[in-house]
Image 1 (cartoon, rainbow, N blue to C red):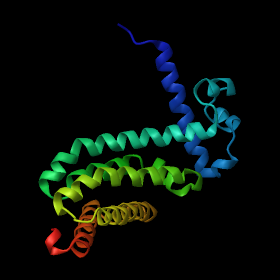
Image 2 (image 1 turned 135 degrees about the horizontal axis):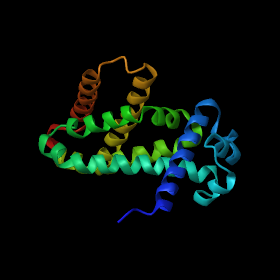
Image 3 (image 1 turned 135 degrees about the vertical axis):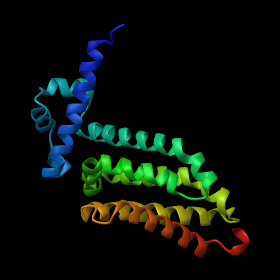
Length: 197
């Protein structure tokens, strides 16, 4: 049975609108971008835009939600291997590869003050997913330590990734992964007392 051509057209239209917004965000602030700008860049009329989104904010949220959903699926796919291995590398590698393959989107969202909700949501996603790892590996007596540790790591990882992109990924991938692992291990060793490890 053939898929509904209307569905294919709708998916194609949404994809073009998202790509157009991201391209425009490279040139100017999100607040300066209108529905007309996006529709023109996608070679569509505004009516087609409004068939899919109520405005520019909803379109931006849709881009962010798509990325976060993909990231959560990646984490879910590798979390058991990570828990069993006692190292963040099994989940960190595919996340880094994902960021590289979506580099332009990530760079635009990281640079946009209007997309700060995305960075906050990304931080929350990583913290939620990492809490079980910390509990399993370190069994902290104080749950506050877990929150501080994960907050430190996630903001650090986001900063590390932003800087890596800014430096045009000059540091070799393996070096970056090793550095991230050392930072995670070193901060855990300092924060959690021997009795808690």
